[in-house]
Structure formats: structure tokens, C-alpha cells
Image 1: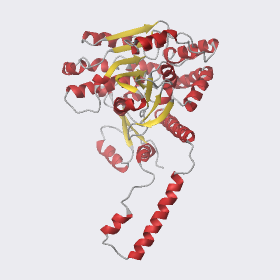
Image 2: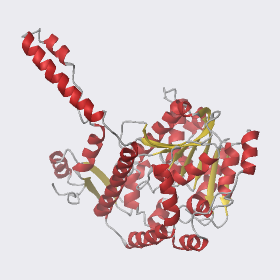
Image 3: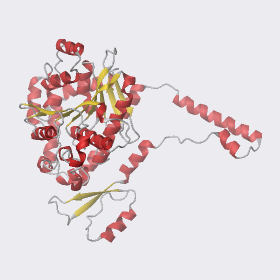
Image 4: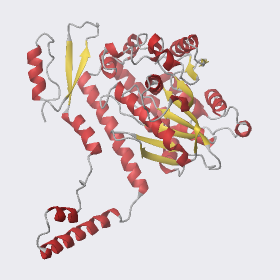
Length: 469
């Protein structure tokens, strides 16, 4: 394999750079600006050919489809009948052999676990390649150590959630919704199949780098217990894709839910979109982009008016205010701007900024009610991000509110509190909004037994202290 990283290129020597690009057409070039924001210096990082090949191999069929033999024979004008029959017998025998392979004993669980393991491998490999290209600084090292301790302390809970994820009959894993790598989603179905159920299309977080559909398993289980269908939508992460790819994947996943959820017992008239952390940002971008397309008269496969409400959990919506904060937390400026496709794209992918554009007033009027949940002790994305976005939306006539939880960190609301069992304030607020207007569902919620504890309290308190998020 050729070297993965080409030397730093000088933008003033354009011809040299161009010739270099011509010699490596299969590589993906990534422009990363210098941290001081200057345009006088930049470097190109070339991702390995293997990443581009991954995208091709994901959709390349194992066995190519060809025209039938009889069609080919007819096109050739007939020919020797004996030779034709011999070839036809050989073709039938080959087809029967292939059928015997595909129709033999199969293990659905093994196949699903294999697909999940393959996806997890891709995520892990791309993450390590990212670190190798961009370097590992002091903050990343300390974050990894803290992450290891944090994961160890919550491991009893992860083990129970993982067991349910792989062995529950109420979870449909790996449903394909598109033709791109990782265009799959998991469905969490309630045990009670009577009547149509409200639906939550959920976009998981992961700093735009390590997001994965299984991260929403705990929330999916919680909501399914309350007769809510949850679709956890997977999407391409960096460096497999950049922000435009992530938004496109999320929108396509939401489209699949809107157009197909009735087949699984979901109510097409009660669909909610929710995202956590980076997923909250991606989901907000997808909704706003859809509204802009509809306001412009473009033909779309789903409508933003189909969405009853949007729930954002610990998200960031104005990156002009957050890029320096992310840098101080270890998501370095050069990495973040690469994910966001350059500094010039920050406006496009900052929903709070974009909704204030006078040209998008018609699109903003199409947005559903927006509810933003955030912890006041969130150091990964300060709670002011949700407060500011909600205030901006209200000033533009959108029904929006921010709900803050005192002393809660970035992961308390999503992991530690649900694993604690008992009463979960954020979850209670969420389910009350989903079941609003459904007196029967609200009555069941009021008598629902509290969730069991998954992790001892002392381990949860330690996890709260060492959390790198």
C-alpha cells in the first residue's frame, strides 16, 4: 500500500499539488485549515484508498446479475441445439448448487451479530485511522483514560442492555433504509401490538466520529416499555463521511420511517424526531434542510409537516459559539472544521444561525414544535446552546422551549439516570409530551412500575465524577 499521508502542501505551489492529486485519484483529499484561521497555510490529508474502497464494497453485490441464458442464446440467433441443451443443463445445475447454499440451514441471530460486529469494526478502524492521521494530543490521552474508567464503572449496565439488544425478540436490528454504507436502523417494538403506536426516530450522538445506532438501545428499551416504537438510525461518521453525508443519511432514515413505519404498527401521524449530542445537531440540520426544500417547492420523499415535534437532547446549534469550546475540550479545531467541511460551512450547519436568514422565513414557519433538553453541568456542550436556540426560535414565531436539569452532565440524562432506575425526570417529561392528548396512555404511564436499577449507586457517582464528556 502507498503511504497514507502526503507531505504538507503549500497553497502557493498549485501546480505541484495538482500533479500530486492526479497521481492519486483514488484517494480522498481533505483540506484542514490552520488553527489560527489563516488562509495562508493549509494541509491536505489523504485518506487511504481502503476507505474509498469500503464505500464501493458496501454496495457491490457478491454475485453479479446477468441476463438469462435463454435470452443470450436467442440474441445469438440459436446455434447448435445439443450444445445449447448441455450448456442449459450446466447452468441449471449451477443455479441449483447456488440455491442449496442460500437455502441451507441459517442462523438469523448469527447473521445479525455478524453484521453488527462488522459495523463496529468499521467504526473502530476508522476512529484509529483518524487518530493516526491527526495525531493524539495530551487532551485525547487523558480523555481515553477517563473513558476507560467511565466505561468500566457502567459496565454492569452496559452488559444488561447489550444482552437485551442482541436477544430480545422485540428488536429488529439492521433494517436497511438506503444504499450507502451504514444506512441501517434498529426498531424497538412494544410487546403490546394492539393499535397504532407513536414513533420516535432517534439519531444517536458520538462527536460526529463514533456515533452508532446501538448507542440508543437504552432509550429504545425505555420507550418501548411505554408503548412507543423507536427507530435508531445509523449514519456515516467522519472520516467515512462529513457533515453533509451525515445529514443526508439522517434525512433518508427519517424518510424511511415516515413511509414504512405503518408496516411495523407505527402511527404515521404521530412521528417524533429526536437526537442526542451530535445526533441532536444532525437531526436539527436534517429537519431545517427539509423545510427549506419544501418551502422552495422541491419534490421530497417525506414532509417536515409529518413530524409532530423535535426533541433535542444536549445538542449544539451555533458552531460559531462552540468551535473554540470544542477545541479546548479536545475536539481540535482542525478536526472539527474537517468534519464540518471547512469554516465557510459553519453557517450552513449552524441551525440557530440559518433560521435567522430572511430568505428562510417560509421554511422556518414549517418547523414543528421544538423542545430542547439540557443539563446545567454539561461541559461538553454548555446548556446555553439550547437556551439560545430556543430563544431564537421563539423570536421567529416557532413554538420552542428549553428544559434544563440542574446539576446534570452531558451523559447523566442519557445514561446514568436511566441506569439508576426509579424516577427519571427527563424521561418522564419526554413520555408526557409523546402521550399528550392520549388519556389512556397517560393513565398507563401513571401506574407504570419504576425501572429496575442496572448499576449500583456508588459506581454511578464515580462515573459522574470521571466522565470525560
